[in-house]
Image (cartoon, rainbow over all chains, first blue to last red; front, top):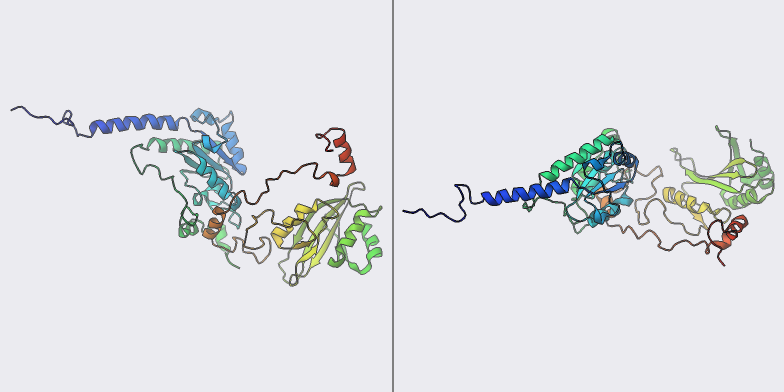
Length: 206
Length: 204
């Protein structure tokens, strides 16, 4: 008796084999394109920006990693690099810049101050820009050397290569602010803003 | 000691308080708040003194709660190359207010705004006394006062909430400053340079 072959069954493989292969191929092509032509939006507020400029200049030259064009308009940028401390006065500014960037977009938090508030554990400073915008790569250092930033960029490449167009949850960066205008819940913000190191000896209320 | 001090004491008598030479060699002289404007005008306009440049205005609060707050004026005579510091003591328990010297030195505008922003000292007669470093809706107090906690009075979540809900454009005027608006306030030599076309054109 002649065996009837289902149209989706190919060579004894799963019916989804071809689709999976196709998705993999598309992901590879798209991610390679994205990772190798990141357009950074520099948001330099302090000494980290000096190291950022050194990274952009000829000796380190992050154009070698596809960041040839620095986008000084957020509307033509892929990756926001926050280099330096962020005072509360600038918090709505960086949030608006982030909101203006088209998808897909990534954020690198460069240096101790952008990542945690650093030594500025005081009334004027945001304790980590991840309370304002979602961050993909944190680069430690005060300030980080250009090699450190380049390593962070390569980590971002790796992260981008692991993404999939077909995963609905692949990017959680489309995070609108809630009705209170916050990205994280107040409890989370207070938790990540806890004092550490020498600043635990200070007190909050008079 | 700067010879201005003895001239001040001869002219204003008891309105002039203690005078001393600071460790960097500059003379510091205390003035009664009620006669500050008078003394400053004299310092600026008397031909022998001519302290025509206000370098800085700042304030000091000491940890000792008994001591008064001090507002410090750094004066310099550009022609004579002499410096003088004038201090005004304000009782912390009373109203923190002092006369503005904006009428004498226009440069006092932002300097006094900064002192107001950081210490909460009011300058009577200032044309535009607003916060300058902190945003105008800042509600936590005056950050450089000794009773101000280092991390601010609100929780971090509340600070982030207020910051993110702020309108970044709200604090700044979009009106451009025009040289024509300031024409009446410009010194003569600057008007002359403008007339010669060194810095743009002459407003008619």
